[in-house]
Image (cartoon, rainbow, N blue to C red; front, top):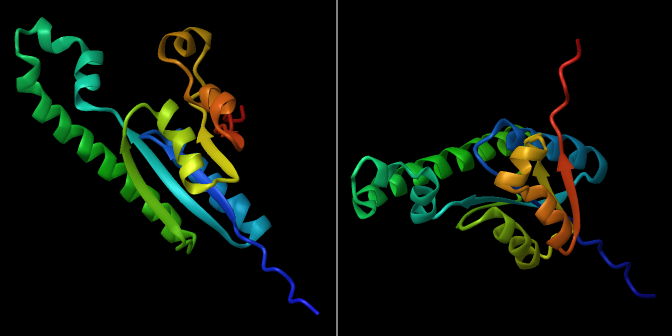
Length: 167
């Protein structure tokens, strides 16, 4: 008689940025997936914008007369500090729930591209992202990472919303 095949743990990718919405999404995953599955693998992915893209978005460098090349090292340093802070916060949240099978990764680029690529790389069963709760106008201008992922990631996409305060 053949031995029963051992079930592979679920692979969950969580996209994070430096927002309370992302941290809430991690907490939601830790609370809900741990209670249901007991064991799963987790990849926390932070998409860090490239310094040139960040400088281009700010539009202030040229306005004040400073050269873009002069500003890039400062912007790069700030982006690296933000990424370190995001990953440290994610590590704290996972550690407080005693989850140890976690991969933390910072990848430079647009999260709309990075997260579906991470799904493929990690063979994810679920991609989890937090919702910023933008209205239609902000979503149209900034673009919605969660909407893009829902249409392009080759797995289930869960968009976690922060609960609204009760009045």
